[in-house]
Each structure stands twice: as C-alpha cells, then as structure tokens.
Amino acid sequence: MSFQNAQTAYQQTMKQAEDYRKSTGKNTNQTFTPGSASSGGTAIGSVKPGAQQKPAANPYQQNALETASSGDLTLLLYNGCVKFIDKADQAMQDKQIEDKNNFIKRAQDIIRELMVTLRTDTEVGANMYSLYDFIHRRLIDANVQNDRDVLQEARDLVVDFRDTWKEVIKKDRQERFGGGGQA
Image 1 (cartoon, rainbow, N blue to C red):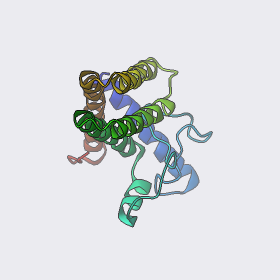
Image 2: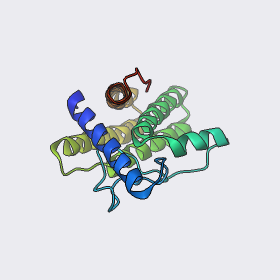
Image 3: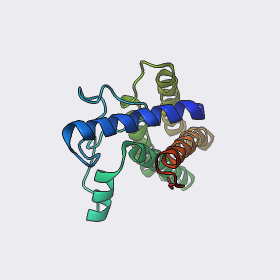
Image 4: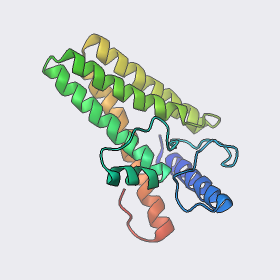
C-alpha cells in the first residue's frame, strides 16, 4: 500500500467524521459510524465505533476508546493484532496449543473487522481487502500447521499496515494542526 493512498483514505475518513459532527452538532467521534447514510460510505480502514466493543477494564480506557478518532481506532486494531500474533507465537513456542489457537483466533477477528470496514469500491480498497484476506489465510495456515514462519509472515504484513497508517496519521496531524502530533 502506498503512503499516498493511505493518506488519502485517512483524510477522507477524517473529513467524513468532521462533516458528520457538523451536521449533527456532536463534538466527539463517539457516534460517528462510517458507512451510515449521513457519512456517505465506509472509509478505507475506518472502524465502526461500538462494533464488537466490550467494556474496558477501567473507565479511562473506556473513555479513550469512545473519544478516539476512527484513524486512531484503526491503529489500535493493528496494534492489537500484532500483540495477539506475538502471544500466539510465544504459546506456539511453549507448546500451549489451546492458548495459541485462542490468540490466533483473536488476531483473525481483528483482520475480519478491518475487512468489513473497508470501502472496496476503489482500487486501493480492493487491494487492501485482498491483502487482509491473504493475512487472514496465513493466520489460519499458521494455526493449522503450527508454523511459526507463516505466523511471522502474517505479522510482518500487519506491522507494515500499522506503520504506514501511523505515518499517515502523523502527517495528517502535522498538516491539520501544524504540530508533530504523535500517533
């Protein structure tokens, strides 16, 4: 995925969120749902707040999730996926088959969430969907074959997506706010 395409997708998501807030008078992203009639479709890599959401362990985490932008939520998903892949790798190494299976399934859930939130009517979205599908299949292969190399291959792709997305957020914040906003 090219940096320019990711940046364009992120800017579209942020514009949709801002337009939604203006039209509803809301001043948080908490109720913004990409893909709703008022937002004009799901943006590439955006996350639907509230989708598969469980209460956070503490109120500060819950507040952080509720007020995060869709770009930040996508970054959290990438980070969570990497975390679960790393835990699965450790469980695989320790021969803890049930734990390995559970961690890989959680990573697969994250990839599926990223897949369903894509707008695939563009070339970039369709390409990202294909890559997500490939990652998902590699996670299945790693689980079934107990293959750490295949798991690492999936991890490397997720890390590439995460790092690209992180740079897009950082660049967007620099352009919008003139600072070096950390992602």
